[in-house]
Image 1 (tube, rainbow, N blue to C red):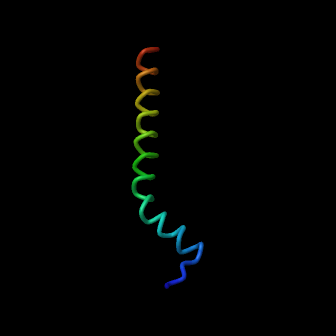
Image 2: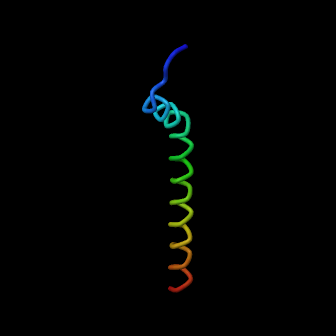
Length: 44
């Protein structure tokens, strides 16, 4: 059996989840900025 270190396990998790996580963070960020733009537009 191959021994997997904690770091290797975390790296594997990052490789699998990294892109999905970045996509989620980016879409959350863009939604937030859109909401800010909309609020600014309403106030003007």
